[in-house]
Amino acid sequence: MVIQTYHSEDNFLTLFNPSKQVAYTRDIDRAFRGNAPSLGLIAKAFGNGARDTWIDIQLTELAAFSGCKDKLTDHQVQGLIDIIAEEYCYLKVTELMYFFRKFKAGEYGKFYGTVDPITITCALKEFCDDRRAILSRLEYAEKKEREINDPEHIRYLRQYAAYERKTRFYSFNFRSKDFSFEEFNEIWWLFNLGYERSDHGYIE
Image 1 (cartoon, rainbow, N blue to C red):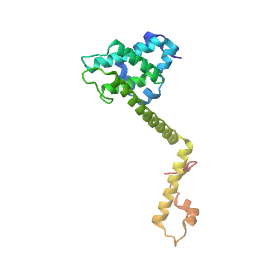
Image 2: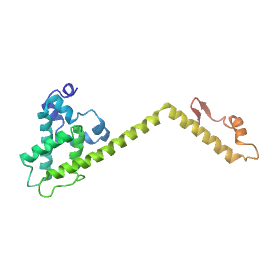
Image 3: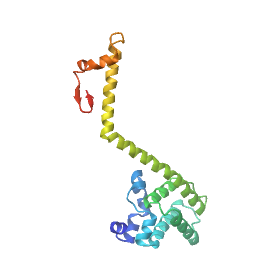
């Protein structure tokens, strides 16, 4: 699927280059639950070299963005690549792009004069904690959206609204000594002639 979608390593690297971090992560739901491949899938489709090159590009761009005089050494870069590839292979590339974007925004620590690999790995750990909360929030919102649009839920809300209208009318216009609510319920249709009845309840 990854090969059919992105065709080649070069095309993949072009599509998911660091300049697209903001554009690809504006929609949080798409960034975290969309169809972008994980690091593991990239490795399977194009090989470990493609995965490692992509991580390298993101790290190099982050180091350049930081403005620190002392950059990562080749040894440090390779160490970070190995750790990210091994520990975070399940992350989508768009999720990592979100991480790098937020790191640049100052939400996951900062560098003090030099690009520090430990700062990046600690920030990634913190990000994964946030990721769990983000995914839970997105799943909850999706569940609520399904409930809101569910025909049974809509029917219930309309029936409840009709019942509330009926009880308000009774409480404002009658007393229990006149007749009980149960008795009123039997003749409610006399007072409800101004409403149109549907299969879902009463609608004004």
